[in-house]
Image (cartoon, rainbow, N blue to C red; front, side, top):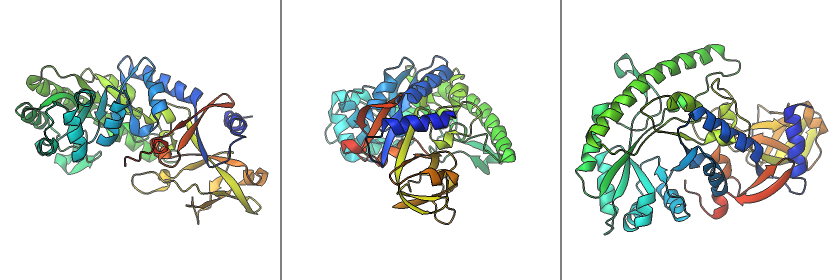
Length: 400
């Protein structure tokens, strides 16, 4: 029996009393992945990215480990909810236009102390001030650096279009704008190198592309390490008591942690290890989050149909954004249909061994987006469900 076959047997036994559709998290795999992230971070704290987890119980489980500290959130409403729930260090990773949220933040000393907001433009400070509604609390601010690699005089850009702040001078200018404006304090710098942390460098069947990605990433790492250090020096000249410099992601933990200028690492997807993280040479994780759909039809030899399953991930549309049939091994989509909203035909020899009601296990392309489809996660240890916990959706929250 292969390791994957053994996992399938465990998951089927653990959930035999439960009808699919359902989602689970294998806690043995989750903990092993967390420990690997800690090892790769080399002693620097890891700020867990909540959008890749979207379950308070599992955020707490990660943060209970030595080596994790703080949350990186994705909306202001989520940040305030987490802070009210007892999380005392929440960095909002994206700028916000949530005026009601800013009014609440500016009026509550506990929330203002726990939540740090992201900016990359002085106009965002004006928006926050206009939303205060009389609240006088000092707003903690983080500045985001654009990490993209620019080549040929800027005519070629590699990396996500995020912050407009690319040079040390640009970031320092915004830091000065914050210090001149009462009611705000610069406490950190964030720089997410998605073209390094979020792009696999060993894509199966595509050796030339994989080599090109590795060359690009090596160049980008060198350029960013030098520029990030210059940015930190420039900002510290304006804000000597800067609290943190955040960088990295699951795919770049060890290289980002090696930079002296970086004080903490961000990571979250590496806890669940979705399918997009199968193509990395820097680490190998264990799939921890899966969902199961029931067999509801047997249209013919070598074919079964499961209920639903069409859960594409965000990003540029493509086959790599689709969930992948994982267990039993050997199933594939019908190329004429793919995964559907209400039914999904699956092809392959294992189909003939599946009965009506049997579970087919899938891996999502991304991590936390799975939790937008399910109210609860069944937590599995060994071959038993030891707890069932709500996702954000299960607690009544869909923040985006």
